[in-house]
Structure formats: C-alpha cells, structure tokens
Length: 246
Image 1 (spheres, rainbow, N blue to C red):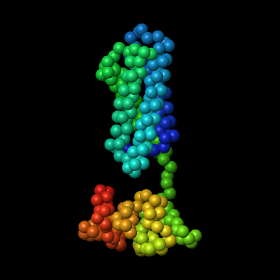
Image 2: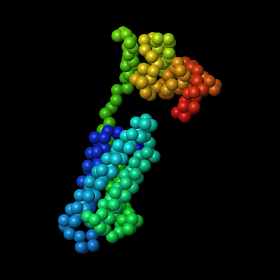
Image 3: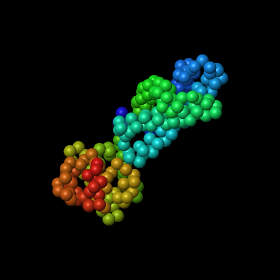
C-alpha cells in the first residue's frame, strides 16, 4: 500500500476494532489455558490484552502521522514497518502484563512469543491490513485546483495544480508561469517567493529566485540548467543536490 490515511480518528477506530477482536480472541480462544485459570482471571487477561492493543496501535498511529508529515510520502516499506512495529510493541507490553503480579505467568520471553503472540499475529495482521486499506479508501477526494493570491485584491490566479510550471522572483512581485491549453502564460502578482513556497509546499526551490513544480521537470540541460515545460531555469549549487534526490 503506497498511501496512508494519516487521520488519527480513523486509525484510533482501527485500534478500537482491534482491541475488541483481541478481547474476543483472549476470552474465547484462551491461548494459554491449562484448566486452572478462573473466569475472573480470564476477564482480567482479556481486558488487559484489548487495552494494550488499543494503546500500542495509538502509539503507532501518532508515529506514522509524524513520519508522514516529516517526509511527505508513504510506501510499502513504511506500511510493513508500521505493522511489524505494532506487533513487536504489543509483544513487549503484553509480556510485561503477563509477568506482572496480576497474572504471574510462567512462560519465558520467547515461549510467550511462540505460544501467544504468533497466534494472535497470524489472525490480527490480516485484519489490520484490511482495516488500513479501508481507511485509505475513506480519504476524501481532493480538488487539485489551487488559488494563488497576492497583496492586491485583484492579484489572484486560479489554476489546476498540474498547470503550474514555476514561480520566479521579480523584485516586489512574482511571475507565475502556467500552462493554458498548449501555451505557456505568465501572470505577475505582488507577493514574495517565500510566501508562495509556504502556501504551496509541493513547489521545490532550485535557485534563490525560482521555485518549480517537479511534475514539469523534463531534463538537465547541463550541470547548472534544467528544462521544464517550454522553459529553462538556472539551478544554484546550494539546491542542486536536493533536486537530484527527487
């Protein structure tokens, strides 16, 4: 899965669903029942497992949202890491609970992994995967229209995101280069390059005077110049490595 729904609300709902399932698993399957554990103790075990699952998934939800905001991307590697991290954290915390005075369990660390955690993971992992895929499907469709506003009321440009080619500094103004049909047009707006960059974080700075939309990058003309859609721009040494890493 190459997308992520970073919404804490949806991810905590997944955590709640997972905790209910683990309560049912612990109470009805009773994975380490030796016939000596009372009904009351099984209630404690089941509630403990379910609460721990919710807390662990909540931690993962916060961490993945932080990573997603920091890097601005998500991929299958991050997805697998999130699921494995949840299972690992769940293993550690439930083992601590299992060995606590409330239960005083007899399994050692890796016995607990083999007899308890692997059983729950085999069933919980498909549920987590399906729930996360469903959460991604709940991401609302976004309108890709952007509105660039200047300091003057008449300084406004409404275009599709993929129509924007680049933005260049021009003293107290910025020049907005965009595609309209098959023609490149330019609009002068009273604003600053810094404000445009803050408003539209998908733009990449390649020079102190230029921002580009990476989707319009065509090729390197030479070590100091790139070709965009019908436009060529200089690239500063300070920004070259960042552009090469994209």
